Image (cartoon, rainbow, N blue to C red; front, side):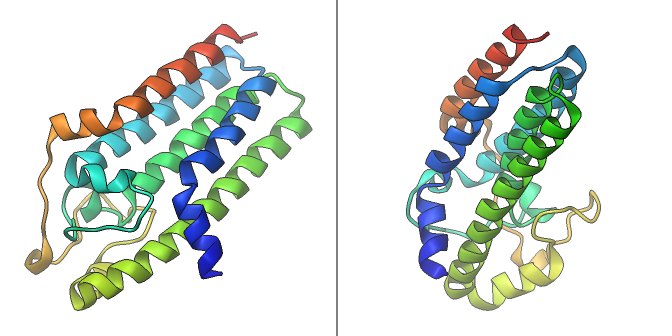
Length: 196
């Protein structure tokens, strides 16, 4: 299973992109589904920008890398804010796309997207956790005990003060997220164009 997780990690962007293209191709968004999806996308991309402002370039690598254990900002609320943002972004496209489809087809596609994204990101999270435990040992174990993996349990940072590390840099966030932002604009422009 580790080889599968390594494959999913290495090709995470390349695996998700074709699914997004399928959704864009079959999309029959309504104004309501487009607005609901856009709200999810704004939340997802906001979380991603916030997280990348703390981590910078290492999150773009095809190799596992963690120069530091970041535990502040969004990482004080959940251990995997980038994947939370990715899940929200993916489900945002699915939500917008299926609005005008027959209910059974819409539900099947939406649940298929949720299952696919859940499979990909849950396996990547397991791989990264194993890596971070090897890299940071007790600090990471304490962090895991304090902060949930993906779903925040509140809006108060839970990280033990002794291991809080990291600071936000907006320039870093925008620099490393610019291609994702370009893709987001293109995807949402096509979905807006297809509104029925």
